[in-house]
Length: 249
Ligand code: APR
Image (tube, rainbow, N blue to C red; front, side, top):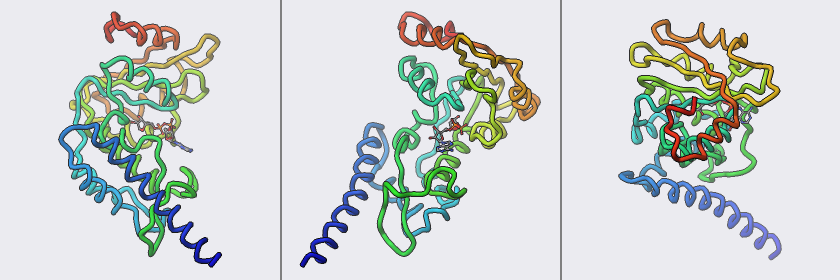
C-alpha cells in the first residue's frame, strides 16, 4: 500500500509540473490578442517532449516561430546584454522601446524552465539541465532561436543597453555578440546606438576594447554610436512620464 501511495504521489506531483507550465503559458499567452494559445502550447511542447533535454536543437522551435512570427517594430527595438533587470525596468516604464521579452513568445517564456525526457510524455520544470550544462538544452535553444528571429526582424535605428560596470560589456559568448549583432544587415538596419549604462565609479567607457570588437562585428553600412549614460539619469528619465524618450540619452 505504501508503495502504491508513493507512486501515486509522484505521478500527481509530476502531473502538477506539466499543468503548472501549461497554466503559466496559457495565462501569459492570453494577455496577447489574436493568438490561438491552446494550439501554440501544443506546438511549443512538441519541440521538447519525448526528447533528451540536452538534445533539443534550435531548429526544434522552427514550427513554433512559424506559427508565431516575430513582429518587427522599426526604430524601437532594444537589445541588451548583462543588463536584464535594468533594461526591463526601463522599457516597462517608458513605452518607446521593445525587447525580445516584450514579444509574445519571449514574454510568455521569460523566467521559466522546462524540459522533457526521452521516451516519456512528461514535462519537467525543475531538474532540467542548466544554461551551460549542455549546448542544446531545451531552454537555451529556445532563447537562441528567439534571438535569431528578433535580430532578423530588426530594422531602422536599433538600440542596445550594455553594462558599464563590467570589464567586458561586449562578451563574445553572449547571445547579443554571438547571434544578434551578426544578423544586423545594412540597409535594413540603419544604425546601432549602444547605451552604456554607467554607475559613478565605473572604469568602463565607450573606448572599451570590447566595444571595438562590436564595431568590427557590425555590418559595414550600419552607423555605430555609443553613449555613456548614468544609471541615475536613466532612472530619472523612466520615472518621469513628462520626459520624452528621445531625451533620455
Ligand atoms: N547561466 C544561466 N543563464 C544564462 C547564462 C548562464 N551562463 N548566460 C545567459 N543566461 C540567460 C539568463 O537568463 C540571462 O539573464 O540569458 C540571459 C541573458 O544573458 P546575458 O549574458 O545577460 O545576455 P545575452 O546572452 O547577450 O542575451 C541577451 O539576447 O535575450 C536576447 O534580445 C535579447 O539582446 C538580448 C540578448
